[in-house]
Image (tube, rainbow, N blue to C red; front, side, top):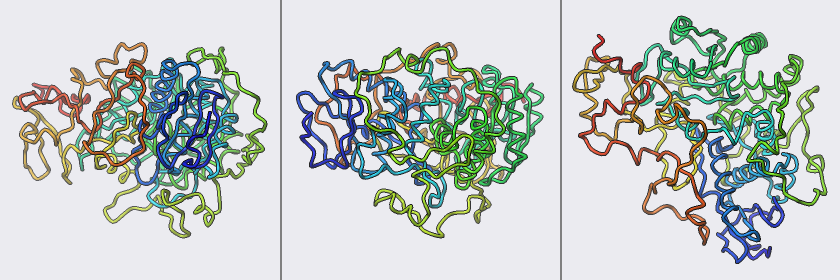
Length: 578
């Protein structure tokens, strides 16, 4: 392949699959050639941050992008080469490299080590590390090699199964109004936002009562609930519904004691079914304890556990919790039970039965790439992303936030409004500004459109004329009298209190839809774009319209009560019942 745009390269061209797939970054958009198609990754993916976090992209994005790329290859002639590229931005570059690496692991059977070696050909500059969702400057950066190894382990243990994963279901339940939860280990570990005693709306965020989750948990054999935050709902609601409930409180933004970790591991190991874990936002404390159990049970490193949990639930494991997991890796190794049984089929045959491509033997190994390995039976060693704080600045340029000495934020601090880390993260989910983007695949951190911009807590009741909101001051408002654009509703009409969407109740396999996102802006900002597009028949994908641009409500005559979110029974109550 002739390097026609070599002068515009940001870094170098990396050969992923010889004569077929390449990865690069460009300052200017390259032009397609007779035998080469340039695929602009940044046009297809998007990540919505909490603060200055930027990845890795979530399960649904990895799945949809991989299938799109695979279908593109099927539609092209045999001799056509694809150069998947990003703009000259360190953050976009490492996200794009992760996507291409995951695709090569899933569809061509390459190991994470070999994929990383191939991607490293694109350096210099070096790939930047992924930071956490902390408010302050990062104290630890997660290396791309760890993310690839986590994805490789996910395929091995079938945490990610391309033949069974349902992106529509993933995107539905990660939304706040639909439950705000994600499976980390299918059928075993679920992470979710902490329930409240009653369903209500506060500062635009919809809080769910325990009853909201009962039907879904029973349907998916979740038998145990673990609460890590202070008591803000009556645990007897879960107990009386037939669930086991445990309290393992520790301070928001902090790290757990050894006794708490031991109790958590014991509870999970002895649970007869799935375990649902929550703190306030279901991110920091929840992700930390889940990572401890994963290190103990699956023989993976702290970095790999953090990477996979963030792929499943973006924003998990925050601030000092990262170093805590690295320090606890050896201790968790000593708690191990025998390894779980390996799957009967090989990882290479798991995904669409694709055989590995024929490619020359790599002339090097991961060791020659200066990758410090973390031994399972030894203390955690420093990764390339674990640098003295005064050196972390060199990992970033103008597009990334440097680390300044003495400028870290205490993640356990309570601000002047009495808000903890979890409160701030929940507020971001509710009040994030709408982002104008034409990306086809989005990696949201469960953003929702604010239901109303108010500061007081509101309870919700209903009468024959529609739902009535009553504030603590005694002021009653009919939601039907409010502008439709200010009310968040589900685009699917739900007839029961089940969290399960109607079109998912009997689904047996993922269904890809056929339309991309609607354009959010008539004049998007200037961006790199490919000069040739793929045939429309090769792009079979669709996500739900972002930011409510294609709501089911089209006129004020629609009965808004029939389009309430799926937790209607818990939020509104049954009609005719006082």
